[in-house]
Image 1 (cartoon, rainbow, N blue to C red):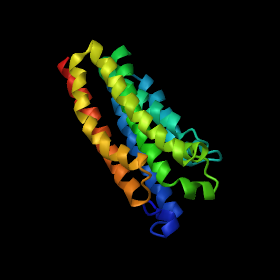
Image 2 (image 1 turned 60 degrees about the horizontal axis):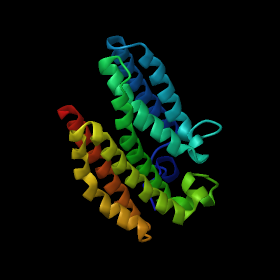
Image 3 (image 1 turned 45 degrees about the vertical axis):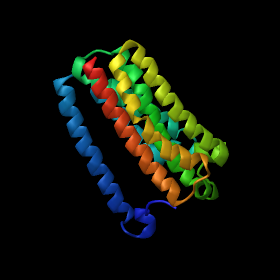
Length: 217
């Protein structure tokens, strides 16, 4: 139960998908070079590593997404690199607050991947994809997802001790209830697709509210 597979369903050929991916990488590279020219050429290195990480997630001879490392890389690139990198591009300095803010953002992104892999856990196991959900098993993956969101809001509280306006992000907490309820009560199939959507909305809300709160601080 999941989205249609482009190549597997015949909706696109492998070559078409490759061309689309290369085009996306090229556009990202051009945008990154422009940003580096305006800020720091160190961003070229960050961009190159990010593109490599994106490609090797499911591509190459040893895709790390199928070696139970997807969550680690998602936290690094969707949390640390995204938040700290954005701050560095604007301030040309590494801010401690940026590293702190990267934690809840990164963990929300990890939660998205976890619930996605929970949905696909049996199919992935059947074809030999060793995602973290496959290694942990269904029951522990459900607890892991819930724990991630608990830590997200715990991190926001800690940030709020230094920057009280950051506590605005706690207003997103009610959005965590539906996906957590679905996951903890054993939801499967379409229910987990709804949980995935809900986690996406939560991630957006946390990012926006935390950003606004830190700006007001």
